[in-house]
Length: 253
Picture 1 (cartoon, rainbow, N blue to C red):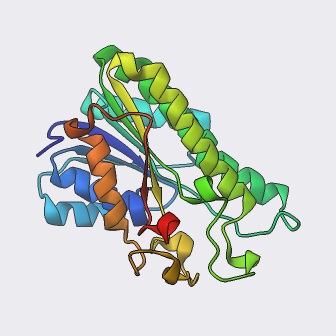
Picture 2 (picture 1 turned 90 degrees about the horizontal axis):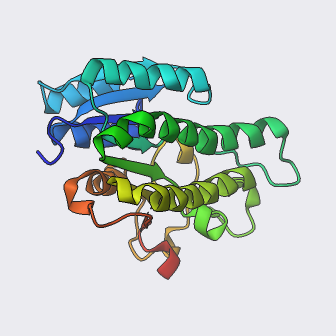
């Protein structure tokens, strides 16, 4: 029970990596705050099936809305007290080329993937993590933020993660490092997990060329949740500002 009694806020908790991260953290004793636009009923059911005593709070709304973010953090604090873990997981991924990119898709990806993470970091750190001199912030980025996007086929730019997505994930990595330097002396760590091709809703219908990976399979949400759990746990206290690539060895293939 590595995080027993701690409280974890997880955005995008209705499915995929967010849902699996919530299950893993609940198994280790954390109180869970699920944040999403969509119902988190399936995630709550899975949490309860593995830990009947788990305490779960569901907060539904738009994470790009600063007032919703503030209200969510206040609800979490009112319900559970101290806030220990923040997992900025929610994301969108447009696959338009730069020529076809629209402002709606650009703004959606940047606002969901970067602005929302900033809003939650700001609201959770000040005053909660600062007052308790402890916190674990985990930002889900992507190897697209490192290498400019993973193509699912040679010359098939329409299936590649788009420029807005890659830019947003690169920004999350830079934000992670900035926050780590700012808050390390306060007992607060900030790290990022960068998934490769992982079977989630975002990758549904996309056929990746797994021959470019050392591990010849798609990743699972559980693969990513294991890394989230490490950064959320006391074992990672000497790691901050790090980007852990969980990508089947894509960059080595």
